[in-house]
Image (cartoon, rainbow, N blue to C red; front, side):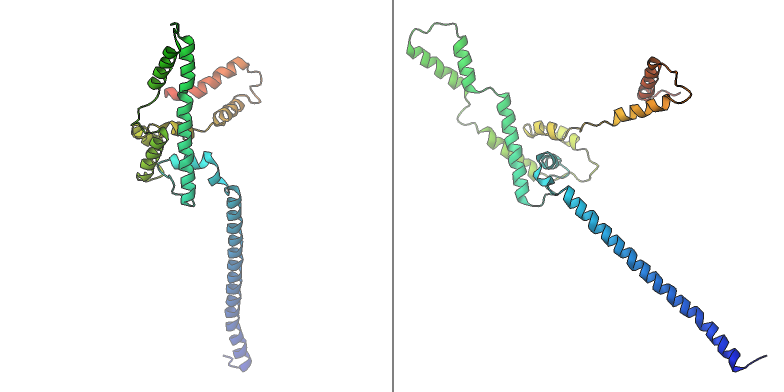
Length: 243
């Protein structure tokens, strides 16, 4: 067996080489991890900037912030400040008052209509004044009744103090249906801001179904028969029909 120094040197260098290659591979791995981390950070920054740009003015748009506040799962949870909450409450109160004013006919208009349609003769000025006073007194509210605006504000405060519903899967409309008696004025605004948004998905699905019926081997299919097939395809599942 050869124990020469040259052979020993060659064997020693051969043993060291794998260690050097392992060190090189670990350095490359660290470099790749750093590059991946930098790419991820750039993606995060870009996505955050895009989200800020798209939703920067969402708190200043009534259709979004009112719908959020009237949802008992969220209310003012995601508002940036109490100032935004106060603005939303003021907007809701104004909407409630406007809605009541639109439904209720003004007393002056009722007074003119009653006086113009009255068929009884007016013998003197005093009788006309007394009739007008009777109409005004019958149409006005009692002195002890609170103004509509203060009632709306009370209703909003009671709603705000109640605890939010826990869980995003809870049904907000079901909650309003159960508590509509406690908030008769707010529930009218809820019907406007928590309704289902219009969508073109059903019509798009119908067009896709028509594309499946009309193919290269059924180009001579009459429109009347194709319409019947589409009707059956869309409505038979509602009847739980088994083919």
